[in-house]
Length: 420
Length: 172
Image (cartoon, rainbow over all chains, first blue to last red; front, top):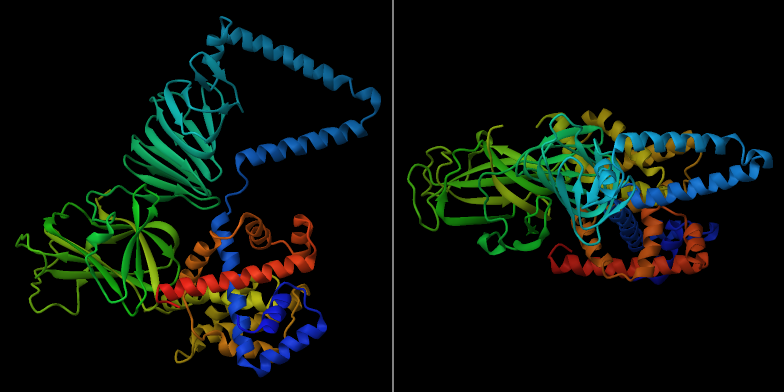
């Protein structure tokens, strides 16, 4: 901002602090001086971006379980206090207390009959979770390593917020925040073991998997299958599969891949259009390193990774890409470099390049499946290129291509997917 | 490309900007989603009339300005603080030096990481929780003018930080 008075007036207007005289002055300046209008647009865009950033960061995860419990407890306490104030004095210790005592007595008798021998070991058998002989009844805080009734273990990393719930027959782990590695013995004939997070639910019939809860819940399955439920939809995640749960949204699945292009290594992207760059950018939703492909000089800026030993992708149905969507509406593209029927270990060409386009019409991390049948020969082939069709038996490179606007494309994984 | 796909592509490319435009004119962010949705419906209904030699963003903003007035007429709640002349003046420069929202937001996220705890709380109350300035002031124990000034300084600093980040990436 170069105009202090303009900055002051625009800020007062957008914050709702401007009085009539200031609004009149602002309007007059906007109409007479384009520099003021530009200043207004810059602040208005920043204002919208700030709301967008905070909305994305918050990702509407809803209140976390611990907050919900605290709020519920405060509400309950306040309501109880209000009721106590409103209730006639004689009623305070009347039939509700008697009823509670009767219910408690019945509960103790039933529990005693069903639990058999007394003692902590017997209690541990009844509780949904335990650590050795120590039982964890519903809403007990869980830490470290705990056992699951019916068989299985949960390892919680330090700082994880988790609670027990459910019963021995149907244990429920409430995972508010943090990370849990879970192994569940086959639950033949019993209810599923359930994990609830602020974003959804994971139902298990016997498997090993890992959950990481932050602003979203990431589920990685090592063996067996789990069902994930969120946003009124569900999906089954199989061995080596991943799913991400966000509050109020259906689960997003990431299928296993058979072969992975060198997405974890920025230096493997050894050819780039002018102004393009590739750098490491943290870890993605399936636990792999993310590459940030900065494609700032459109149209159609590109980065390419080639490798010496050809990879045989012929067992796959197409290319699977896990990327961060922008929802820009732009066309992005991928190319595969196919060496056809003549295997080679040379550095570069003559490859045949095959390209497919897709619209960046989704926001957030997701998997794109690009069937090999959608890849067509590039319309600008190198003179030495030999087009004998996309054989997929000798793949020696992939390219990611931007659209008509500058963009940073974040890619976690490129590989091939097999038929279901 | 099919008409529907073409419309979707154009609308998605411009929807963040459209939200910014509507929000800046109404100064009522609770109504922005409704107005943008109503605008999208009209844009789709009139898409056959869209002159492809014109900027889609400018066409959409023109229709959004009409929808803002219509929405205000229906709800009598959204304050319309600007004259049509002032709106036109803003519209005339809106498309100058466009940087894609995705790059701006990524740069802004990096800049926000450098903001201290207290100012970041103020920003979160204002932009995440959508509190009015007087509510932010009450929650922070400061006066309205002091909070307004603080937000103004923060926006100026963030704006400069974003500008530098984008320039370093060659997108500014």
